[in-house]
Image 1 (cartoon, rainbow, N blue to C red):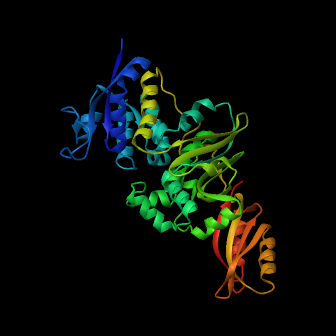
Image 2: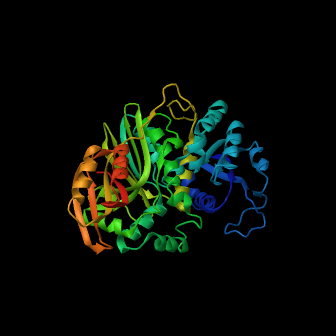
Image 3: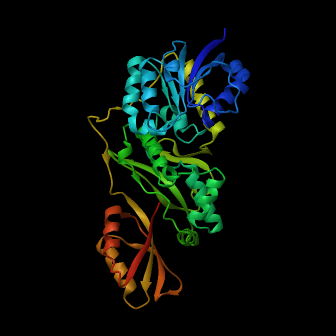
Length: 426
């Protein structure tokens, strides 16, 4: 006999609409494959009078959250509101009342994961969040289940489609950031207020979740170093290309014992690296485990149907579970043995300077770098003089972050001014 499960939607925008369409249009296949039938009993919306693409049955839409949370027939709540408030409070209340929650809300998880998991465990409800990171790519389930026998040493992720689209266009066309951003907004690929994407916050929320699962320990959002793409110049992308590098906004997590570094910033990677070919709005995660070695997962990281695909996958898993599983690491806000947040990571650097064209300048730069343990791997002089100065481009060997900052701050501006600094990962 088919099992009928009644659902509640918290919100019903693009992603909620995608889930509705997937559950409706794919219902026979879902029933045939799983023996499950789903009925959306209530959907919370802000405006009951708004014209919608979906012809909801009478009585489904409501603007009162208690109609959904207080309905004992609704056993699974799907949350599409996004953001921290009020979504996090309503997710927690649904869990407290014993309702399983499926969500794509990376902000709620990055900022309030311990309390949400505690509410779920206390009531026995399930908490599923595959769609919170990388849309249709099943990276959460992979880390929770498929790679449990691996010790993950690092993760490199292209986890924000908007910034990847912008950097791809800048690389292909030599266009400046502001022009490509405006075009992305016109096409609907960037929000009217794109700050969460272009300042790196969206990627940082996702990295906090990925690192916690990969390293089996809570990695707080507050420990993620964040640097966006708003200051990227076409000149630097071109200089990197000439040296064999592609620029990406990378979410990077590395573990060495109890030391963990988590950082989001524009990063040059070699053209031969698998992530270098991930273009436009695609997402990808590249990781290394001690048993599986290197693996890469790539796919659509956003959009109504790709995200709906991940949500419905979680929904099927939740509906079929006899007992819900939770992450096995100590997910307390202040664990007894926390990871040490390493802020003095080692990486190579790309540096562009405007230097006076006279003897002794290169010697001054090289000696200043050497004083702080920074050695130069590649140096190029670019183009003709401008205002009596020439462009110098350096790629360093790996150096400590703090030492590199000190070295750059010590460069005598009468010899050279630092115009751009980007990190390089091999």
